[in-house]
Image 1 (tube, helix red, strand yellow):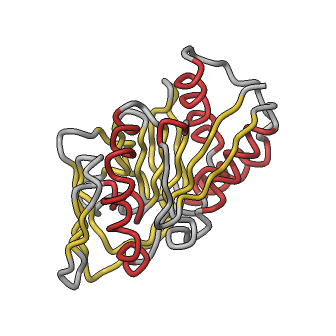
Image 2: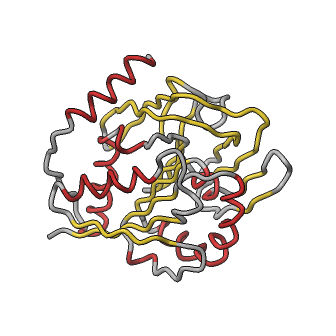
Length: 244
């Protein structure tokens, strides 16, 4: 049996707007293919051997939640997690998790939260929230996919040269409401503002992450067994029809 291991970063503090559904989607789409995916919660104070993990998920949280775990992320998990990201750990980070993987988050009140520095991005807090349904056109494994999600963030994230865009915003605000960019990618780490949860609405993205994790663990590309995703894709197409 193929096996994978996933680390869920700070699920109590960083899991809003249905973000736990991303972990559930990964579990189910693995299980339906006979792949065993174990999930370990990384809590404040946890001792983690990051080389044991193939996948990681880092959800969104309010500014207060980010403040609670920022130091633990930087000081306890920082060196190991940065090394794992550089080594190709497959990681999905949403909203607050995405922000904390960058260099820093300067909140609208002037508090500077240090980031992990694993992604070449930084975030500035704004007084006006960027809220609403969003569509981001992304290329995943050579296929163009229109990802649907819901964004609700006051932070504006700006990219440096060390990351590439996840995709182009067709509907919504994207990372900062200015440049039409939605999300960032570095190696196999993906950050974006798409809540909803993202992966149940976009099975193509779920399968892309699983494929990357299998290739990293087993050393070669693995062709995933096809699954019936009729209902998921109907829901995705319904949202695209409403928004585009």
